[in-house]
Amino acid sequence: MTTTNAEWSISAGALAYYFRRIFHDWPDEPESKKILQNNAAVMDRERLRVLITEFIVPETGNSMLPAWMDHTIMTFGGMERTEKDFARLLDISGLKLVKVWRAPGTPVGEVEARLK
Image (tube, rainbow, N blue to C red; front, top):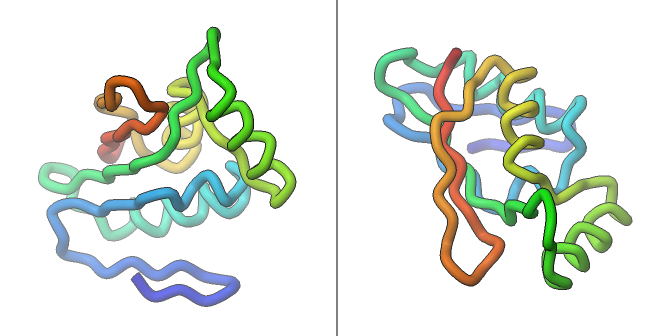
C-alpha cells in the first residue's frame, strides 16, 4: 500500500487485503470510509475479502484496557469500535461484514468483509 497524507492507494489483484490497527486511528468519515472505498474499487466480488485486525470493544461489560485505549485514541481523533460500529463503517463503504473472529481473553478480533 502506498500512502500520502491525502490519499490511500490500493494495488489490485490480491486475494485478501489485510489491515492491522489502521482504522482505530481514523474517524468513520471521511478517512476510514475513503480507505475502504478505495479498497472496494479494486476488489473482485467473487474472490476478494478484506481482513481487519483491531480491538473490538464489547457492547457492554467492557474491561479497563479497551476503555483506556478508546479514550486515548479519541484524543487523536480516532476511535475503537464495537462489532456494530464495524458493520456500519463497512456498510457506508460499500462492503458487508461477513464474520468476526475474537481472540479469547483479549479485545483483539478479526473482521472479515466482502463487497455488498
